[in-house]
Amino acid sequence: MAKIILTQEVSGLGSAGDVVDVKNGYARNFLFPRGFATPWSRGAEKQIESIKQARATRELSSLEDAQALAAKLTSTTLTVPVKSGAEGRLFGTVRAGDIASAVESAGLGSIDKRRVDLTQRIKTTGVYQAVVHLHEDVNANVEFEVVPA
Image (cartoon, rainbow, N blue to C red; front, side, top):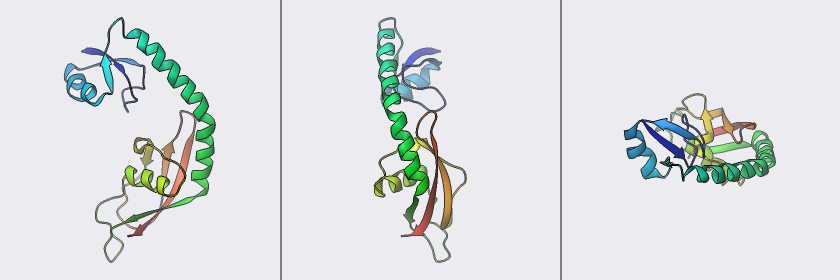
């Protein structure tokens, strides 16, 4: 087991500044090359404090922004254009990245696709809902319409 410090949020593992134990291969082959973590050391503990302070100030300022964005998202129906067949069946599925790009193209701001939670697989055109986790305390229910491109 390797002790590491997360530099970014990793779903299922923790958020920036957390010290976690992971298997050596996972740290060496996935987390370190992508810049998600650094090896733990006594000197690196000083970095943890600066990461946590930066995250705390960012979260305090973004709470109001997250609430404002949540209000915009819940009041707007997004349009997601996708390739589809004659009967409305899609060539593939609608993914979280498609929802994130629809939010950005609607001029509502940018969200991370990892924060979009689709409750079902979307394989036909129609109106659907997704949950966007904007902040620790703020979630937005987003309604979107899948239309043929």
